[in-house]
Image 1 (cartoon, protein in one colour):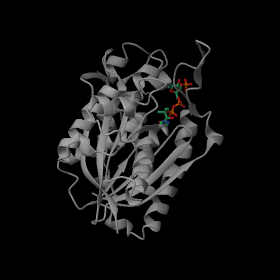
Image 2 (tube, rainbow, N blue to C red):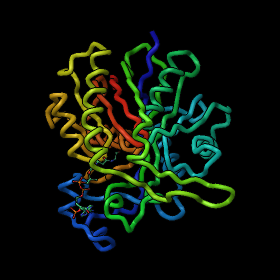
Image 3 (cartoon, rainbow, N blue to C red):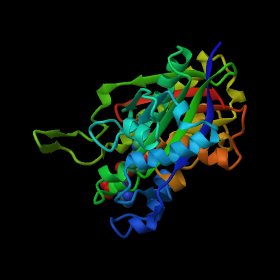
Length: 320
Ligand code: UT7
């Protein structure tokens, strides 16, 4: 039986770190308010000349190195992002070119907001198990700072920039065990940026818009349900999960979901304090951070979960 296994993970955070106190100089807020409501202490923001593909390429290089993989061995590239460099071509095509991949492998973006990395992993898993590719480069990368209204304290304190990547390879050893992805467009207006180009003019919103409480309420229920469903579908005992690696949006959502799953806090990977919400980048960033720290070890079982605009959400159980 063919599985998709993570061969290597990498990430990249832009150099500029902005603390809650720094933000309190721009909008009426405080470190106390932000930290109590979200668990966020700081976020990293891309420089003016850094685009999503630049962050993606740096994360990808780290992942390729960890996977001991030459870029031209990659035969599929998927980037999860809502802040691609351009309307088109895809950020994945730019990444292919910047990495010097000349084998003409398929490369495309997936737009599933904060669930983008898991959606991309799920698609790559299907490619690999279906024999369509052998080594896939999966990236979550965002420059959300470009679509955040820095005058709006309701949203600007929540988001950050960054990228994370994984090389997935075909293997006889178990890797991805199960994934369940969902979407419900009925909730499109709860978390969105409904702007677009129209004959040379931008029409509609230029910034992220969110009904925070509605997201919160839906998220805890949906994430708990999909996580349980994923574990059950894999016929995997919940107590054998070594780490919950959740989308890093808000520590209160993460705590509530872990409680529903009866997972103790010691088994939860939490990086939101330093990264804030980096949308599609948050799960691979968290993964890489705690692989590097030594917490996450080879052979351990990880449960990934997250939700974002759409709503789009899901969970994935894998053996690292
Ligand atoms: O990937 C998914 C992404 N989204 C999320 O995960 C968001 C989920 N939602 C949340 O985490 C929370 O709803 C928020 C952290 C966004 C907001 O917390 P809340 O407890 O739901 O606050 P609220 O929106 O009900 O606002 C409470 C008060 C309001 O003031 P009044 O009307 O009570 O006077 C806001 O104006 O807090 C005010 N407020 C702030 N105060 C200081 C809103 N933002 C801020 C701020 N600093 N940054």
